[in-house]
Length: 284
Image (tube, rainbow, N blue to C red):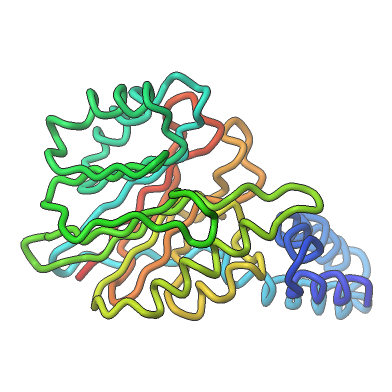
């Protein structure tokens, strides 16, 4: 009953939902341990821990690994990372992400100097770029219809652009949601609702949204976004944790797509950021 009440709290908007979402993946460890112990020592008592495991799996559904899909046609790879403003290593991150062969590189939390360092590493391989405030997009393909997005924040921390691939346009959203702090999450929630509203109103056939959403995979603040786009789940067998980079405890850097298929999705420890990068390949 306590587990059910705790998981139910994770479906409620607000601080409680955010806290449960951040800790939910780790609750599975003791549940699995109890299931194994019961199976070995007390099979008659196995029903309760099995029920707890099923309940946990249902709550974890948006965050569980997915199976990779074989590429049958054209694809687009998008690498994204919060490079951390004070890391002084945006150039290292940019060079490492370019080495993956990604078609698009999306970086957030860039200061003027770090943007210049990233540009020095990327401009030759990615001749098309668009910059808004602290977020930047580089592409091997032409970028058109690019514009900044405020998402209710009052200053520009997100963008929308169309990447013109040989197979047609893909609308790319890049967002760095406001931080989540104890007692203060309204700005983050407003931005997440805003990006969902923008994608809902977007008539583009193919859409991908990436960035630092400052919300765990099952956070109820992502519910509106999950209603308008499919949340990309890791295909490498992991839960795709991204923060903190040295020992990731939570996945707050995400990708969402509409009108595309997920060929692969993984995370990468690159540069000196406190966030791991995400690398997502989508098929047309």
